[in-house]
Amino acid sequence: MSLLHTFLPEHQFCEQHHIRVNASPARVLDMASQLHVTDFPVARLLLYLRAIPARIAAALGKPSARRIDARFGLHDFTVLGRDGDQEFALGLVGRFWESAGGLIHVEASAFRTFSEPDIAKLVMTFVARPEGADTLLTTRTCVHCSSTTALRRFTPYWILIRMPSGLIRRMMLQRIKQLAEADDAPLARPE
View 1 (tube, rainbow, N blue to C red):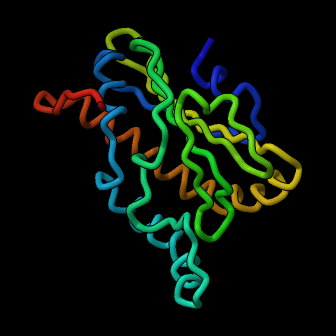
View 2: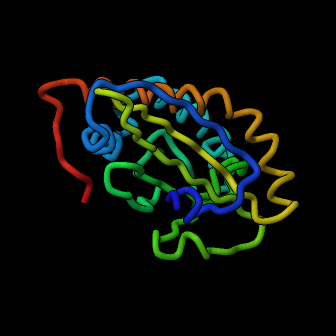
View 3: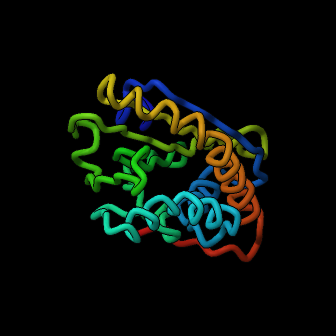
């Protein structure tokens, strides 16, 4: 069973992208697990723009305990696990449509069963499949909304962010390819 299915057996939204990498699946997933938002200047810009409503709310005296800012990135995701050299999964929970992002920290051990009214759960996986001497790397991002209210609120948000989010995921794939194919790329698994 895939990590995606383990942590998010049902979803209403899903998007995937893939790239061919001239490296082993193990190396490709090692590089995927080391990504950081600072690797992507365009992503930092998009995340900065995403944070503007929260900054406006704070300036108007409506501070939020769960504020997104330009530092939001992969470090905010929960590492859900890695299945050998086949799949690496990250998760995120929240009310993403809120101006402040509505992130809720959930430990990996509680992710699958976590339940709260009107939230969305997101799982992003990197799947590495050998294809000859290469690896086909696929990133898949799926979202499950816990209620019709969450679905109604998340749908316009998904429509708005789907293109920029897809761009970020394609940039991630390009960066993984670049790192995995480089002879001098660092090789350290996350702690």
